[in-house]
Length: 371
Image (cartoon, rainbow, N blue to C red; front, side):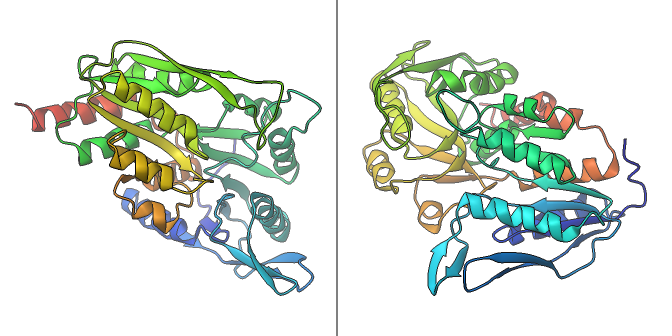
């Protein structure tokens, strides 16, 4: 147990997370005006050869340091051999390693805020392949990191690789529901009015976490893949079938952790719409849109889905933010509360379990919008 009394709180943002550090600092000041948080600067210096080093611009000696890193922020560039290119997740992670090295064991404690966990889609071994996420977590532990916080990790069992490391997986359930209430005053969270859906079997537990506090039925899609071939790193889907309650005249919320190309999400949305769904909403924590947003614009124009709720935990390009179907889910306050609680030595039980907050929110919402 760390004695955190009297230890200063320092936020150390890596490239692309500067805006989040400012917001966290302001939220912490609102939560407890007596807590002083600082933002330290680190400069990633890139040599012409492509090699790099991290240089701390401020002292963090004896401080409780929270390093912020967004491994999929492709809006960060570097120059290698006079050619500008986007930072890859590997390079963002290496910048994290460099920064921890620059701290050199002088901090009181090192915590890492990594909303999208590095290599989290490579969390298990099926063939003769690497276990990138487990190796990365073990490496951070060896470097002296004490806590890692992430959001909606692809499979939280990956924390078994580091059983003695503080590992917290925040789920933005309350924040998503709050955003939906804000944008749609007529929405109702009950089994007569709504069905929750997972686009695949792997996401069933995630949807259950939404369904349980809301007491809403949920269904899922079964994906049958062709395991004999690999296309763009995965086995192609040959069948996508819905299993679950009737959807006729009900709102549908499709929940997933991340949109890559978005093909599965759009297929699921089209099917539930054809099965009589009244409105189709999609809620995700992260988005890549690796094939662009043209297919989403087209589906939206055809009425296949009504809105896409995306958290602001990670980079989202301007084209997406300006799309008519985009709705922001603010999770920075949630992260700020986590930072404050960890630095102050406060239990995280109420943060990790949102049931009471959801009940209170819907109670106020239903009273406000009662017929």
